[in-house]
Image 1 (spheres, one colour):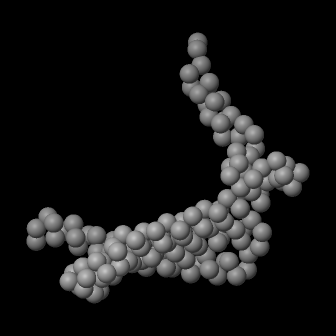
Image 2 (cartoon, rainbow, N blue to C red):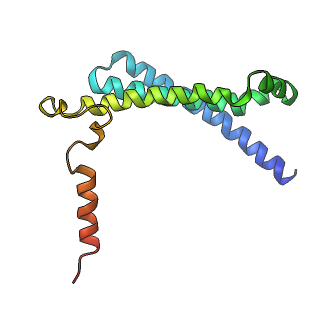
Image 3 (cartoon, one colour):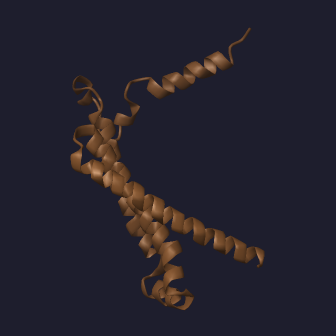
Length: 144
């Protein structure tokens, strides 16, 4: 077996594991989505969509070519505009990000929520992460 064949075999094995594990986790998130509300529902939907994207991408690019064979895959790739499928995968990530941002925004206390939109909600509380990073740098680089 050549080194290239070993790499291909490792890729195939890992692709099947990714497809299986993401399908399993996605199923768990789907069940959680059915019973969740509020912030947990938004987080669950965001994670579910991300796992769906990873499953679909791994299946499309890594598993499907093994199932249908190299020649059939090449014909399909040419007929389907090849990488155009990545646009679909990217749209799923955009929608997942929207629901994840919605979860972050919904977790802000009601009194402060009006001061933030979906994009700025990641900066709540004021001085949160940036303040913590600055404090850590001051402690690490303290003189004397």
